Image (cartoon, rainbow, N blue to C red; front, side, top):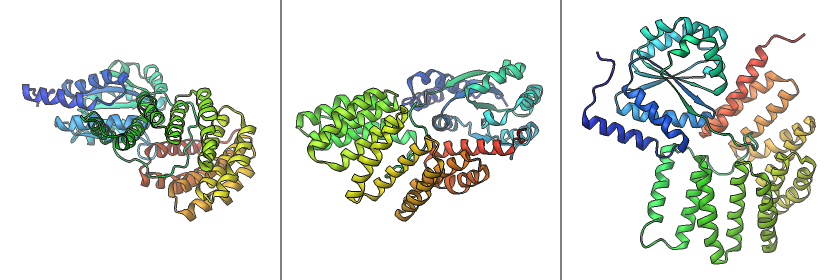
Length: 442
């Protein structure tokens, strides 16, 4: 058996077509590394140690999905090995699983290494590197966050020298609230490829001749901007909102839709960390329009977003006053039970940030969670339980917090397909387990 696959003109064309198609909607800065990684996997030797640096688990999973599609098409069916202390108490257990997987899979994604590899395991891997290369004839893709890379180079210098390449797929996380938040409507569980294909379909239709009328074109533009936002392509989402949607609504004289679009623009700016500009838009360009139109609900929603920004900026007292006096009473008057409950949850957020844990816990347990359960809103109920667990952790009740996250939060988020929030909960579970396992201080 040869180390490298046979390549014909036809197979080379199919491979190049597949790898370029797979990289079409990646972040531009990652395309070169993605293409280089795919070529190394396809044409490199059977055993390779490929270091893949990442910072966002959801984006990592999307990359793996695209890599797997190309590799499977080349007859290199990949597998995954997730390292945990429970399944792999030492390096020998991990090595045994790698040998077993390599018998059927020419490529293996190794996940969980940043929390699993300690000094001893890195050093053992360093000593066992020749045995692994001999007994695990597979391309090992070791997915790691940035910090463990330095430890790998320091603790396993010989292994580090064996690397076939280091590929960077880090992304900047939004500097605004990273907690999971209530969301109305279903989670978009479509894959990155499916959403990208939908964008291509929408763009082809919108660019057709003659162009579709505004009553068809504008809703499709709105869908496309939201799809780009869900893929993390904020610049393109912002461009559509600012250059295609907003001018059309202004030309039509549709004040409400123009205000809604400006609010969506501000939301994107918040995601980019441009809080001052987003706040100005909400306060000066959105809220006055809804007040002029007499739209109480959308004015309250806008005030709630203003309070969110103020909370992030640390202006807790002002944010709390807006929520308690200008947002919650409106939703209660309108009979909007769900929005009122969301507002109460935001009030609890601020109380928790101010250290008023008992008051925050009472609101979540008595005024938030029961309502979501009655409404059948599974995701919002899971979020409420997660917030309760956070308060319990702050009070030192680690076992109770862990139970909530493991048994009542994570299963719901996974069932709903909310991978981003599920990943965050997994990180909290890992932290709690580490705290519980640590020896008592003093």
